[in-house]
Length: 495
Image (cartoon, rainbow, N blue to C red; front, side):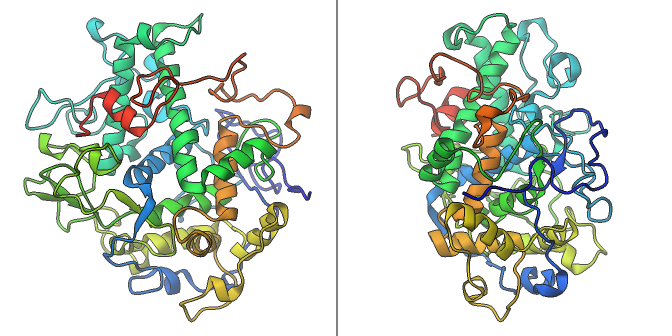
């Protein structure tokens, strides 16, 4: 079987020489494939594909995906913020992947929640003796007794490990959920302790939260977006695309194309709770809304703006009357119309019109980073996994375009054609699955001949006589844990 000729970080470019040292050492971007960059002249212009009214404009239609609940959309964004934080990713600044620095360790270790721990990030932790080892949590601005918000300073800035988790109400509420989960585990540590010795109570609680979070990724998130069969195939056959002989890196084909599938999963609006609905963006919104309709931008919240998670995952109870969907949107080449019309709070007034389209921004970013074409990646990966690439007629069906396709667009079209948008297609699924499982320590093909993996231990990589199983309370029985269990144990609204 053909193997990827590129290992580690791909081409030797600026910032990639062996004597360059980064801290932390995992904070490197690189390439999965040694393939030519897509030439702008060989593909439709980003503005031809991604502007309002163009082929990627999904309008305000709810394209419900019956296989994927809405929680997966925003959990995927939370996971993304746990993997990556590129402080130089502005298109006007640095577009050389070999020199990009990932200020988020790509270890899926919840450093977006824990920062550098109580000593390195004391602003994230409650300093009261009665709440030792616990994370800070915030209260509603209209009810100081309701702990439903992120902790904030006097100016309302969220005190969290990744500021992006306060840019969206639903992601912020997921962060609140994990804060509460950690604090519950601290209180019930003896009940949940899995017997690991030589660790402080904080370290035990942190490890348990991390490993249950990783369990959700492996057992629920990945099967939803790439299919349970592909997850098992990668475990059985080993990773063949994401080769990491040494320190893991963040592939730009993943971060700038394949993993951006989540943008197509965003619905135009959601039911937040029994009284409140929300659209993506409401023009002119400043202070927290007092109306029954608000938008999803983050910031301080009132007590009535906390998410009830029954509207995002099947909890076995009736959803709110405000809810228009409990499903994600399909993974396809359409984005909800508001994402192609970003407001001034996100894109400053006065800039070029194309800057307001998330689709155009993604496509420009792919060109700037020198990503290969979708056809090139489709053929290369297809030869390895025995999957024929999409033909030009398939790629451009429903449009007037021809030629090469941007990688991001190609992988969305593959999902649309191969799975009806219910999950990623074989090439996109393989890239996403191998990178995420690789970051969690799943072995690559031939890994038995490689030196010991230097990444932090995960529940997949820690040597144990028996496979690790969840210890948290689950309505499904011992050794199981899912999103409904997460929300119930954390004590957030889900009914």
